[in-house]
Length: 245
Image 1 (cartoon, rainbow, N blue to C red):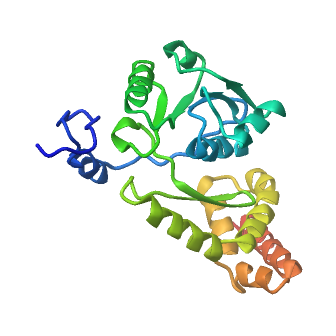
Image 2: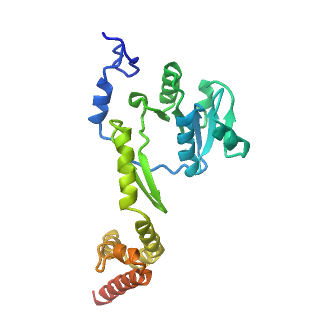
């Protein structure tokens, strides 16, 4: 077998032939959004990639512990200001206790395999950066605008393509959609009180989102009053329909 990167997946082929990558492309991924506020999360590694993962966790309110003998100045600063807990040492199995998820970003195969195996035995969420066969969840590229988060995944096939799609999605679905989401959130309480079934509420919100005039175009034109009038008209229509039914 030709020399190459070490195979770390279940196939154990000696040197990697990307069989596991093809397996992942055929594996349907269950897409979920995690609420990490206050949850303990572990990042093993102190380099540039680790910093990127730390930033993503902090943006979601996670309690982050970083394990690394050395760390980038930005990580050190986060520790000094109390945003993360940095322990200047190597990873130990016991470090996983009490954590919801772990991200290994060490660049050291033997450490990454150990973290993965330890986490799997605990039925934890584990992501080993850039090693899909050692992950039970994939970190998508995320475009955020207000309450809207668009997650782009290529199932590990091409992070570069995911980043391009993220950029284009952010340009296409930006601030106007975030503003509309907030306006719709304001009327969710009314809908739950006044509309008795899920189907009624779905039809109500769809009549606004797909309404005429288009609420997104109204927002782009700066006509927020027009959007509110569209919402009020939908409310009036539903109230009238209930009284006449």
